[in-house]
Length: 197
Image (cartoon, rainbow, N blue to C red):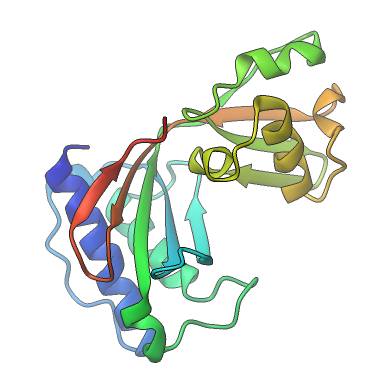
């Protein structure tokens, strides 16, 4: 995505968030052809200026067009089950971040203790699956928490409801993906592309 498309993605997500909190329809969005391509996407809402998580929902697999996935993720982030629904009073005190994902690819590793060498902190996001359990963490999460690769693997397992050492179990399946991240600097403010390293 170029910077213009990234800004458009954040502006579209912001429009959908504002409308959802006000119980209105998302309205007409004029998005370029590139937004018709199927992409995985996450929308993250954070409080401003403290930057505490306020909601984060998305679609890791490219099953919807980017435009559709963006709007659905933005609307759903207003109702993240970890938090009360977003209210209109909060709209001027949140910032919107959009992560546009690459297609997840499985990390093949016969010696599970070597899995840490195949995860690049600051570049990769992780998905773990084991039986009915599934968890995902975006690439920015280990940077924000200053985790190394082993902690990142363990925390992804915890997110799935598994024990933190489940990454060593051969029955667990890990996929990684990358993300381009665009975010508001302030509520409805300038949109910047975030670098993680």
